[in-house]
Length: 319
Image 1 (cartoon, rainbow, N blue to C red):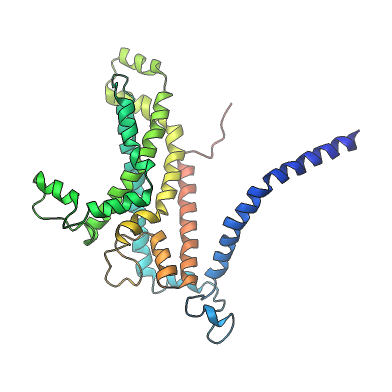
Image 2 (tube, rainbow, N blue to C red; image 1 turned 90 degrees about the horizontal axis):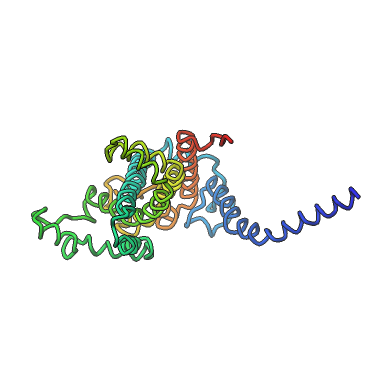
């Protein structure tokens, strides 16, 4: 009897693996194998120039150990990599917290029960999220054009600027433009999540606060924010990891430019993800690009773990 029961359990278990096998095979082919190949390439000097000469030949590629990582961390590329890391952190933090703040403001406004047209505004505000990101970014490239772009025209019409801003060709303006575009793309998702979370807060909390004479700020600080915490922490952590590796905004809007004097591969608006792409595709240095992508993975993983630790995501849920 026990053997029969064990046989049935094993058969059911194998059946489950058969159902999962397409997904497991897909993950292995599309994720695991490229990851292992990237790790292997990072320990070689594999480039576009030596790839056709084979492994181990005089002109071919070979294993170089940690040389590529040393190039980035303590070698000649150190002076380019760490400023690049600093800008990537600034871009990520401003994009993540800014999109959350804008999304929360809109969510609170649209959650007001006295706003009868809320569903119309929700539909309009979701458009940046619904449109393909690449199309939106390319559209912004025209809007930010210094000669005929609509943004300069509007700012000059309202006398906010006297001369056209060179949005895409000066370092600081280009960085501001990249952040603006990323905020535009990111806030609708944050808004939708916050609307759902705000809807779940019981009205009784606010009614009790009104009876106690609490101000709007006190209600926001004592009721709204704590109630949003369980939703916002995982959302912010995942969005932080996404923005840290967000290739689209930096590359499609400015192609990483304007060019930075003394930099061999990274422009003023490049983040680590776009700089890694340039190193691999434009420069043809696959070994160094693979090493940079591994460093990017380690940095994102470490920062995400720190954020989860600080926010208490690893704490056991008490019954």
